Image 1 (cartoon, helix red, strand yellow):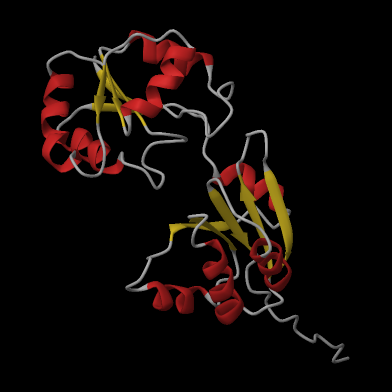
Image 2 (cartoon, helix red, strand yellow; image 1 turned 90 degrees about the vertical axis):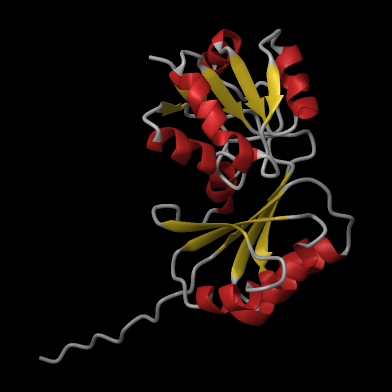
Length: 233
């Protein structure tokens, strides 16, 4: 049976792709890419000549049913994003939901996604965490931060390098200046950086430099008060 394959791609280092992912991309009838120019670099590196077609947030609403129909007609189609796993803060959810609703089999390969190494590198509890992705840029941002102020699980956010300092300033306001945070940027690349400390310390570090690269912020959850259990005997 033909399928929609969700194929993770490297978040930086081109070696971070599985052998199976390379095989699927070579064997597929079509690869849907968020940005064909970006994906062409990866495909050329691995000598993948499968035809590319654009699939991004600006056109996906118009094309998902047509793509599902092509798979039902017998084609195997692979979906990739610019970096990481499609549908994780990238296009992919709508196509997956549409395909499943139309009876198309969907298979997601395991692979790279930015928040996992950032979470592990942070040193914060990783047995329970919440992934928030990108916070609203304007409307609803303060409401969301207020809602998360009492969250006890480790929190993970994606952020633009241009908004990192502003985000950390807001974290100091809503979560407190002494809450611990870890900022990871340029993961898997030559200039990878993981900087940890209190919100105040991390804010000062990034205020003093020009910030580049994709950003993952990992924030410590609110510490639950330790109850005073005294021996009543």
